[in-house]
Each structure stands twice: as C-alpha cells, then as structure tokens.
Image (cartoon, rainbow, N blue to C red; front, side):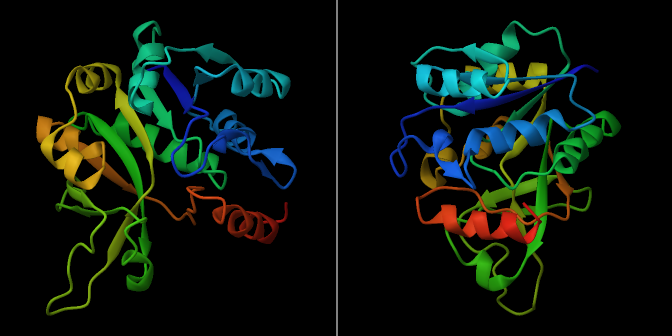
Length: 241
C-alpha cells in the first residue's frame, strides 16, 4: 500500500496561538516534525496541510510540500481527510505538528503494523510511562486487550491501580489509517465520549473501528503551551542537537 503522511497545521490555538511557527533551537516547530516524517522509510509522500498563509510560506521556505485546505475544519483529522480524498494511496498517516521530538522509527512502526494486521483499521503508537507522569490529565493514557487493540483512551489514570501495581501506556498522537477508515471517521460528528474527554480517537472506538496500539520506545513531549518549549529544547540538546 502507498502511504501518504499529512501534517495538519493551524495558526489559531486556544492555549498557544501560532504554535507551529514557534522557534525551537532556532528552527520552527513544524520543520522538526517535517524532517522526521520525510526520513521515515515507510512514507511515500508527505504534505503539510494548512489554511494559514504564514504557515504555508514558512513550510515552503524550508522545502516542504504544502496543500492549502479549508478554514472551516474543526479538527486536524478533517483537514487530513480533505487531502486524503484526492490522494491515490491506501494508508494515510496523521502526524501531529506539535511533536518536535518525533522520530522516523515511530512512523515506520505504525505503518508496518497496519501492513501486518489486516483486521486493524487504525494503528497508533504507545509507550510505557511511570505512574507519576500518568496522573497528569495532559497525558493521554490507553488500555488494550490481549491482541493490543485499544479498549479505551482517557485523560484519567487508567487502569486505576486499586489493588495491584500496573503498567501505564501513554498514547502518542500519531495515527495510521486505512483510507476508507479515515473517510468514514470524518463523516461522523463528535461522539459522546469524545465530547466528555476531549479525545477524538474515542469516536473511532464508538464507531466500532479497531485501533491497534503499537508499543514503541520513545520519549514524547508535545508542545501544548509556551512553557513546554524549554523542556523540548533541553531534550533535543540531550539528543545532540
């Protein structure tokens, strides 16, 4: 299957306006994500999807391919789906533009899992974390069944360790979709659980789509607020940047 990676990017953000263009070690955040995506061996083509001319110009300046999309989209998935409808590919990878620590191996892992698991409609990466980190509502957790299928995602502490110590899985916001699954997903409005938790992936579970959680070794720290920037810069310096 041919694979297209799409990075949806919007300028407006309630917690951090202009986030895609914030400088991280003298490079715009969206560029860090783009460079990771194009190094992934499973990706045949990649685009940045935006409705903002400032983001488009910046992306074109560092050599990215850009597709201008409707300003009416309410979510990144809707923006990705607009691009996907016209693409002659089987797999679509939705890569969040606020993950400057992203490594190409994480993208390769979810695409390879989608190739290997014919029953999965969506694949997404997860990584083990300690309980203290898991307590934060900014960290999305997931619980899975014995086949690695997602049972539920939450900002709450799941599974709650009432009697036994347990392993916590942090969800990393990257999704590899079969094209039909993405287009079906965006046809439905926000679901009940999605509205309650503020987590789009719960719509997919309520629709009955099968999400395969792919375990990766990856230190994730998304940029949600300005105070996340120095944390990410420190982590990048530790990697040798």
